Length: 589
Image 1: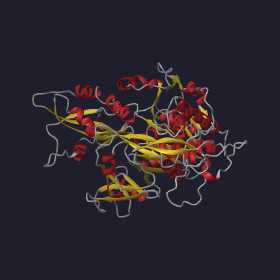
Image 2 (image 1 turned 120 degrees about the vertical axis):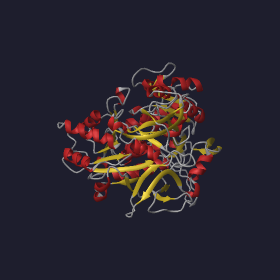
Image 3 (image 1 turned 180 degrees about the vertical axis):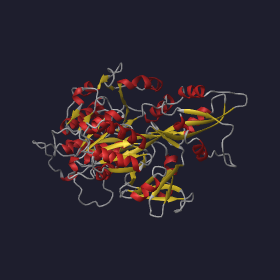
Image 4 (image 1 turned 135 degrees about the vertical axis):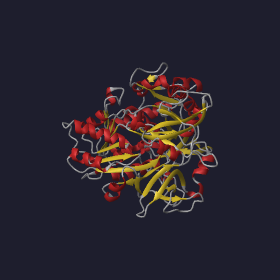
């Protein structure tokens, strides 16, 4: 066996690398079957094992290879129009997908990268981008998919933090991130040709694969290894990198496959569709992996719009849909009602989040489908995605009496331990407290941030920062966000960050940022501003000021002016009062 080095969060350690197929340390059988090597087999150790043998390992990179033994030549990953840059990637079978991922892994190794090196992706949904993530996992490397709407300073910070050895970008997104790449000296290795040709100095995704073998890379991988860093806003100015392991992803996908296959005779009949972000959002753990690990298939759209989503449900005979916000479900239902020619009879499950669906909307959806659809409300976060689950049909009386004004999120899934505690960490009932979690579907910590990790996991629980309440039936209600995160269009926006920019405006004395209900955005980022004495800023002026310093999704959609902000004796702004005061702002617009 050869000796190599592997990077850990605390340094580098020396490990034995296999010399045979898939890092097993076994010689190749002439027919592709590994012959056992007694020195590589441990059947005595009962604790402290690290399962790295090819036949028993847990690796995200194996997801398509495993399917080649069940349905090698049936399409299992399909891109809707706009969700692929090259026609050859419009739909792929397990055999094709696994070959692409293998070639990608070899291409990264040929570029000089080693296991644990980071690969940055600036990509929206596409078949190529998803296959890239699988290839990175096969190589034992770490995918760092980033929201393309990040402000330049934030993107630059993340690039410096992660020190990527390679970057893959969408052609149409390159102009928005070019300055941050230049500022950090980050080069582009390959371009996914959605919306244009390769970035100067890079090759196309297809050309990156050319000349590389489609054999399994010889890499040692363990289920506890980190394969993905997802960045979340938090409450500070700069996001934190959430470390996700191979094992966590497998459990997340299998956990959710149970819910997605509800109502189907066979779980392999599962066909999940979504147009919501699946490359740089935590939803990637649930929906594509839930479908694939069940032996089903996944349909990926470029970006959410009611018309294309309705057409995808019909055209691809989707059995499950991740629809996102109640506002989008409302728009989608209206689209379906306006287009009776679309057949949505295969749809059995619709998953939503970020708020409650009204009973009347569910009645309309069922009537349009011609049968009762299982609707499932979920609540989780990037760090902990085992999720609460609320089925309106499971608790119909509660739902009809409270929705949509009260956001019931139900009960924890079977893989989520959850409590609600006070500031001392003691359980609290009958009053709001903080939701805390324990689960194997959990982040391993925040990348290169020991202090934040220690704070988040104090008392051996993960502290969510979300305010929740347990009712007398044991059902959870999400009351508020301790961290004052605004969820706008499915994106997490740090109100503290936006407020910091607002306070840089010379005419702004005080500012508070809140999320208000909005038909399109779910919650719209809204600034309440107290002008400085003698100043008379306009809303357009303040918004223009923010646009130059924030990402598009962070920029306030509206600015309202006030003489003062409601606050405590200690000076903390009472944002719940602001939300109540301006609750109808966008309904009046």
